[in-house]
Length: 290
Length: 334
Image 1: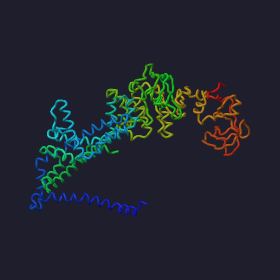
Image 2: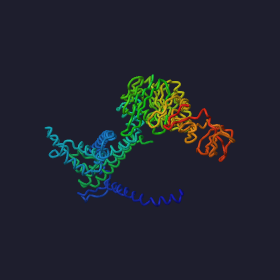
Image 3: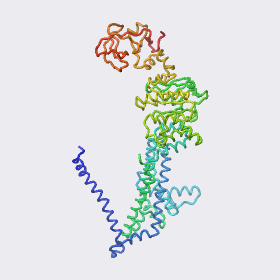
């Protein structure tokens, strides 16, 4: 039955879905591209028409752009380091037989189910608020001045919140990878005289390489566009200290009502995401080859 | 040196007692095979010796030293696993070198020993390949190579040939036996295949439900099985057991006759029966015969004569080679 007829039928059946997806993706992208070359500011509706590269030079030329780019990379890199190191550690712990394993695993995974704005609010008010947050209370109990996290370490605070949300994901992927390591291999290494540290370094870590690659790739995709946590907590400040590219686009386009410049920022963000993707695939993609 | 001594070893997993009580003395340089049906505790026993499981009670001595609570690495034993357990991300060279690297041997020593092991095992051309690019037999040899570079006191093999095809298994069987001749190191080999046990072992431990049924040389086990279980397990095809009136004639609860200890005739003999299936192998013919009043038995005969389904034959057991068993299954003195 795998004939020309069935192929044609298959294509016809797939066509609606493909077309809808294509429109869904192509139209917003085309509109963004179009606006990015237009003079289009809601504050000054009289100014219209073709803008050339002005929007781009305005966005990229602004010092806030460089800072946002650095912040984006710090945010992505920081969260990746925390989630992968922490996730490996927690996965190793969860792999040990303990009483109440099932419930423990669900508890560890639960932060992933909390939606980003809610998670950010929990951290903002429940933990990091200098007046009534848990960390503030803890600091006072220790006799220290409470830390005003979002004012003193804005980007670091956001990294912590986002890492908390993504730690379960990394843990989950790494735990399943850990469980697929054959028991005999571990035992063979034990017989070969490898102690726990060497078993981790020579047997477990290479086995996890592929899973770590997947965690890096998937998380990077999502982390490049972190927005809700910044919006709810610092609002990108103080100054531009916790503004990433996604938030900069929001600030330019929505807060400053400059749709043209915002669109240009969006296009730049897409390009940056692709550059990061290329680098990532070069760096870690070979781990995925079977 | 590599003598292994088990003293009243027992092992339970929770409520389940896998090994009730075993004492064994394995001499230095011996090739000992643990054989038994699946679930008889033979692999568990091997893992106890290796240190991968803890004994519930009893002592394990290596070269007279108590190693009951020593971790696997300190026991100086090497193990070859059923799945080979090669490290997939390392080349063959690194796989073989791993135990030496863990023992912090110098680079020259490692290179020299790896080269030697590779030459011994015909792996020299594959040293830079990954395990997945090797055939089953080659992987097996890498696993053995990884074991021999450590120069262990003893080798432990856990059903190492069960993942190979029949022809390769015969080959590897020879290679392992030859390796033993060459190294003269103690080897313990676990298998469920009594042919492997018979062909490779200096001495065989027959295990059943965690108990040692008999410990002796292959021919001892074949000629003087201690009980009905050993008699049935050693020898291929299996020994025929006859109980009831025929056994009572020999003052026994049951008698056993091996298929090769029957005289066949088409005209006269002790027992009369009809051929049900004749398996012709060329060199031998195995006849499955329905004996009147006794049941189905297997008899071996030369490959020259042919028998048809339904043909009447007479069987006469060799009177010198009738094994007699009591009601408890133990062999009765002749």
